[in-house]
Length: 431
Ligand SMILES: Nc1nc2c(c(=O)[nH]1)N[C@H]1C(S)=C(S)[C@@H](COP(=O)(O)O)O[C@H]1N2
Ligand SMILES: [Mo]
Image (cartoon, rainbow, N blue to C red; front, side, top):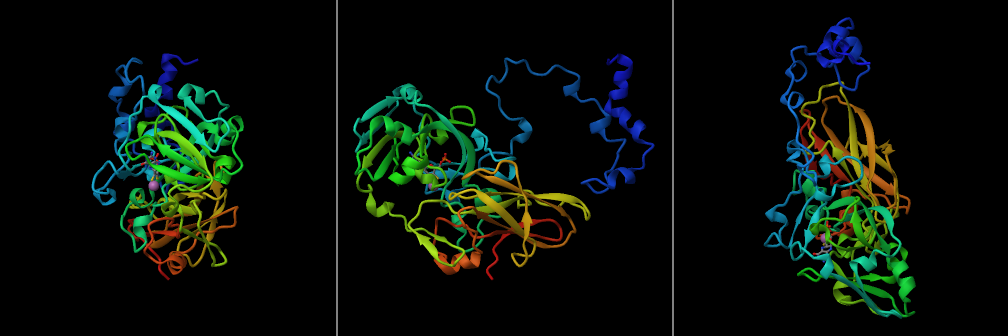
């Protein structure tokens, strides 16, 4: 039982009295942090703060919760350099350096649109499904949600992620260099389940998806992928998502180019020929370990990036002997991450970095490696491989195969230079 007398014994201020008998060195020896300073004069320990002495907010405040004011730097970011003349046809990138686990909170999901964020009234929104189906249909949002739902974790990545950097590093920032992607838990219905109801005509080979925003973005997707795992989704991380992500419904094409995940979805049309055949024919290439390349594909290739350290998460405060967790994200639109290697010397030698947490197909996967900081300069790289047999190419292999004129599908090994002072810079290893 806690009485007023022994409550004082539990307080943090008493900690120093109680631990004084142990030597500081003995406590620190097995610690992740090198000699921890036990500062008996630390005001964060010795002084009672106002939040501990006055009542907090009533439950009537913030009935939809918002982050702590102290997290104000963890936001999507934009730059004129990534705007096509305006901020409507533009991108705001996700702060992947500040995320933990594999789920991006809805307010931090990257946002890319061609005609600005549409604000759709779900009561005035319909999904039309027509073309080569036996029973064309127009669904209200309520009717759509009567189909049996499924929940899956997948990333969405704009194939232009890292695209500005074909010729060399452009941004000394992981957020701008790699933040054209996010990962969420999605809830919706498989298109194959709707199709089972409507009946697909045998010559249906393609599906057009059209958005109802001002860009009316249309994308054509081969029927095999549609019938495999494409979904119409309405739930993101347990709630309806934000207008920026295409409220009230969007198409989810797991692992494939983000642009196929048509937001503000209003129409699905089945046809025997691809729509907009000329622009739609994908000319992207994916390099295979054999040195050969696959042409004409839509999947985002196996990729990875170290999130700690990175330019935003520098190591300037680290001391020699500190243990530090090198962490990062790996993902593949073609399957499940099988393993990640990291290199401290720009790709000459590699060691395996264990995967941690959930390892799911076409989802972000965390890797982690405990490292003893030595204050030496490093060239820190990560290289992921997936269960479809793909491995990330070096920047040199990628350039040799596809040149430097690309915009899309960059997945060459990413490298951070860590200086002796612990500063972290975006570099490319060209040899
Ligand atoms: N209707 C519509 N859907 C769209 C777009 C758009 O401009 N309009 N942009 C596409 C692009 S290029 C990408 S990368 C993804 C981005 O999804 P997000 O904004 O939810 O991150 O949505 C795609 N779907
Ligand atoms: Mo995109």
